[in-house]
Amino acid sequence: MSERAGSADAQIALPLSLPTSEPPDTPTLKPRRRQRPTHDVNTCQLLTIRDVCSRLQCGRTYAYSLLQQGKLRAVKLDRLTRIPLSELDEFIAHRMAEAQYDVCERWSRGGDRAQR
Image (cartoon, rainbow, N blue to C red; front, side, top):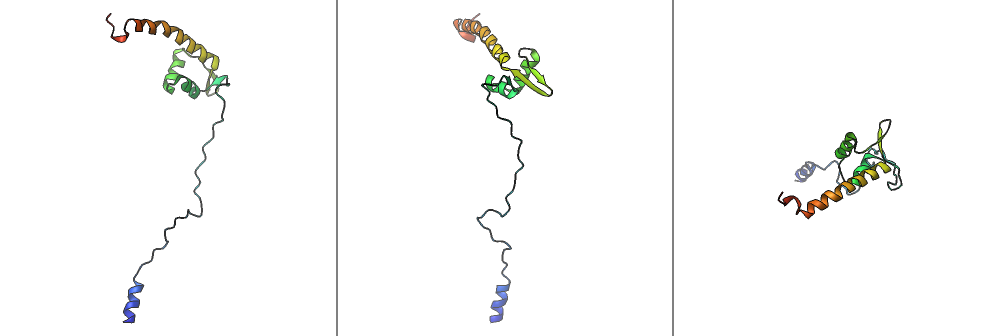
């Protein structure tokens, strides 16, 4: 009988590795992304497209369309496109001057639902 008990124990398969809560010995290294240089947008004289989009709260496509239409001028530095801060400020001031009259007149007539 002892032989049978011994043979039954031999048939139990043990796992090759026991699960542990410890991290593996070799950490997995993720490839490092190139860090963009940080700059203070408030003091920078040349803005990136991303900075312009952030200030105008618009999308990249709209910002590029403003450049193509000539409503916003840019400086090309090889492949880089930069917009002077003064140009963006002028664009905003011009749009505000146009909008004040149109918006006020539209509101005084009752908005879009006013009869014409």
